Length: 109
Length: 250
Image (tube, rainbow over all chains, first blue to last red; front, side, top):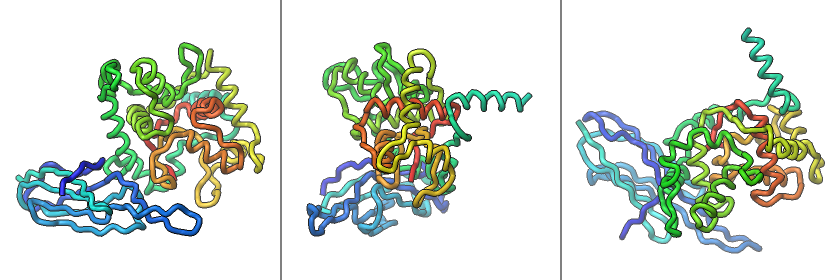
């Protein structure tokens, strides 16, 4: 599936030593619309980012399910071990099938 | 000697602040929220700042130059937000949002963004960020004096079904709790701010409308003169306090 861009801020080091634990902070812009369905209200279908998936040099290092209880503009911080120079691919999976993607290089010395 | 300086500063402030000490909004935040406000890697407001910086460089469809085309890099806007609201050459009192809109319609000859639009919020946040940490330094003399007086009058007028003036909360009950939050000195130095209740970035006028609703008074439209004059009076109260935009508010 073709990937669109998403306003997001990814904070992580560009370089790390082999074996070093690095922290990655991911902030994405998304309304995280919960479903509205109650008498007297106009029904609105749920439209949230339901999954955040991060791969590092092809291997999945984070797979997170997000729920409708999470506020707009979800922020996620996690750590990983710098093993090899490679690309981190961040994918946000939205209700309705849209996938948003951002990439970031990590150089390991 | 140092005491004298502090005394003189207090007396000067006393000219605009009617009662008590006006404290920086950040001092009313919890330590966690204060840390969030100071951390661009977690602060959602920076998503708007990124957008505003892109808009700064983007030329409008009218063929006129981008913001950068005339003003240069956005870092040159340092200190600008700390001086608004200000009186324009034609005598109108403009806040930062109105100044941007005027530049957009008059100089760029492009359609106005519209108050509270994503684009205007983003651009305002990106420009205001350049004044972060600088002291508020609005002009209150000369042409601004009459607007300051109007803002002061609005601040001191009892309003709404609850019949409250701004000062009855923000001077007389500062630091006490109102429902789930602490009553602040009521200055707008952090706006546009990311308010957790809104889940989004919003302007000071959106916050003022919430205040109007709170006392069950008429909510004035965005950009209404009374709100802009009040914004000037609040800035005068906040003179010397650091700009916190984009802030984090509850």
